[in-house]
Length: 203
Ligand code: GRF
Image (cartoon, rainbow, N blue to C red):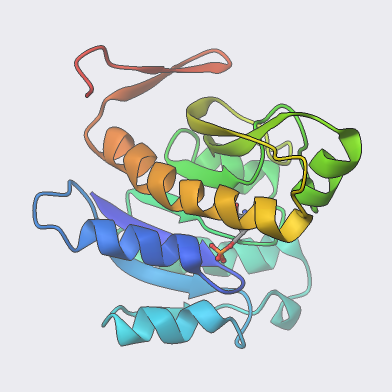
């Protein structure tokens, strides 16, 4: 399967996907890394890995729809089958999401449906919850919503700060994103209503 990775920033999840795809046995390869910001650190990392990168700056367009039309045109031109959002900080319209329904996945640093949105680690600590984690899910028009493919949970330590907790969550993100992409690329994930079902044969 051919994957387009969309980023806006540092790109550490993208790097985890690059590392996984470097294995010839992995069922997907990255055909394009697209950033909506020219200054995204991840672009340099992708180039260093020999990948093709493109900047599609949302500010250069009159609105979400023309921006997404440019995004779609590029994604189609590179022949991607799957889109991975990896720290991509633009909301996508229902039209774009529907077009890529069940072929576009996102990673979010919480156990959704808890703590959607930004600053999850701070909010987790403020709320005093004992368990936190990360989620790879299919993208739907609602932010950080959609059928869950893989989650990883970890305990919140009494002395955790948002930074220490976030660092542990990030390590798990880097494990579950390649896992979820592999399951999807192997055709082992199907969607039934609000749920993603993993084929029983999946290991
Ligand atoms: C990650 O925490 C991811 O879960 C969230 O945005 C952050 C992106 O980090 N969606 P990186 O750019 O992958 O390093």
